[in-house]
Image 1 (cartoon, rainbow, N blue to C red):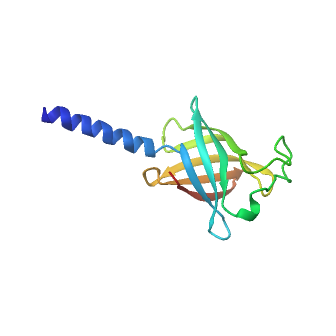
Image 2 (tube, rainbow, N blue to C red):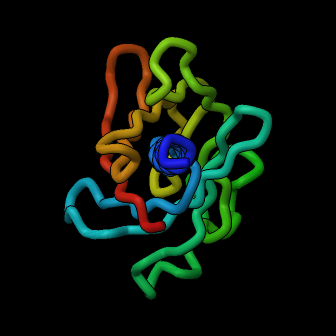
Image 3 (cartoon, rainbow, N blue to C red):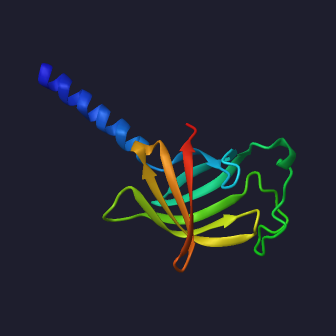
Length: 144
């Protein structure tokens, strides 16, 4: 009986650790310059592919902002509710990394190739946008 209870407990614990080691969930983005919370992005997964959507804009003066610098179908669309990335898939060797796809910087209207890395057992996320060898990293914090 004790062995069965111990095994069940270990399986539940392993499942909860794995659940937090995924980028799926709600994340607080941090402004590069001010280091203040900027927005919340909801990351979801469908068929092994991630998508990120802006769910909240923290600054109340920017709630009605539109992507005026975008050049694709998102041009002049509201940033709140906008899908800012899609396409990354989990790396076959390093399960903490998700690569592929593109991320949009709505303030600049530019898209970059992207890579996500889950850190600190899923409490933080390293978001990297890059062109060739030039890159910019942001650290996002799990909101839920």
